[in-house]
Image (cartoon, rainbow, N blue to C red):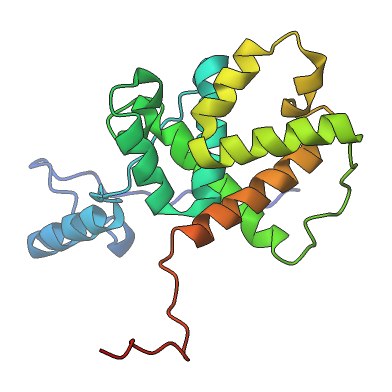
Length: 214
């Protein structure tokens, strides 16, 4: 036979609805602890932090303006802020150079290219400039030397005018980055740029020079 466990009788609930004390796991904390828990929950939530970091969107200019910006930033990265000031002064009324103003929509692109060329110049200081340069024949070399001399003196806008006026002249293909003589042109451009920069410094007086006798 199976053992039968006797059923114990339970007391009837109180008529006033009082069921007695709750077990500890179901009891509510004291009211003074509620505010403390609320403060802890607020502290756990991430707060919005005011920041001065500004995300600047780079707007890419059209090809004609982009070419001027690229060349200008390349020259400024090489020759410094004084060269940039000279460009601003000599092109004050030229809308193609409005990107030099901080309020211009293409100024961020100009700053981006400027930082890019400065980084390239910093890395290239450890390498000779003549690596990978193909020397052109005498007739082309003479054109490249003269052109690079004028562009180094007059700036990228002068180069842009040469490109436009000689678009179909194969003798000026060295102005294109894909041309095999473009590296030689860039080398001469840097060379004449260095000469121009040195020529702007006042000549030093020889140490053995003396004032003429009166």
